[in-house]
Length: 237
Image (cartoon, rainbow, N blue to C red; front, side, top):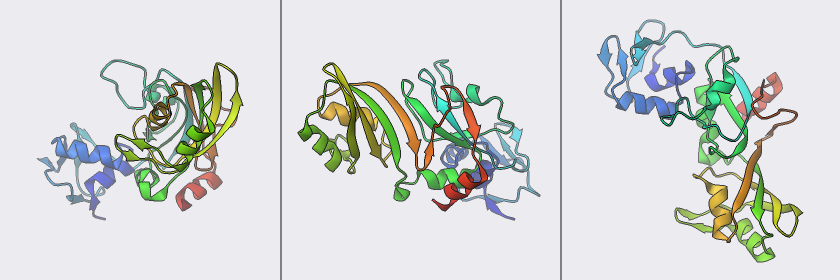
């Protein structure tokens, strides 16, 4: 069956669709010995020979879905030019190659969904689906009611207004406070920039939930496979 090459690459766990498109545009993908030049190029994995960086793509591996408790001090990429540890090192015991859906900053910890299901990853990250992301945020001092209201109603950042967020103070002291923040956007450093906009610095940031998924009993660096019911619910999203 003919399918777009970037879809075949995503289904094979080579890369997300977005990353696959970049590989094609960089001239690193060949089809039957010829460099692929157009993103719309189609192929049949059963009949054609597709290579990425000279390596042949074989038939897709079984769809695999895991959640990882990413510790601080890891980058959410396959390789890091600076030589920092990557989340892929924590997933070496997963029998098939999976890739993270979305990112968490180097100094942020928490839940990361990892899969080789490129279609699901693509849909999951699309802004129109508004997948909720739950964070536990430690900031300096205690935000005022007015500041909390600004976060809830949407706050102006350099790249535009944020969507309304669900915000509540979980614990507070004189020196700092903990808040639960739920957003559905995925802008770069969004939580940190939101609090900077109200004059507060983020001391610690942890993503505790993604849609209906939670960390549960996982400890930093640990992962678990999703259940059949969780996979079904993910696909319904």
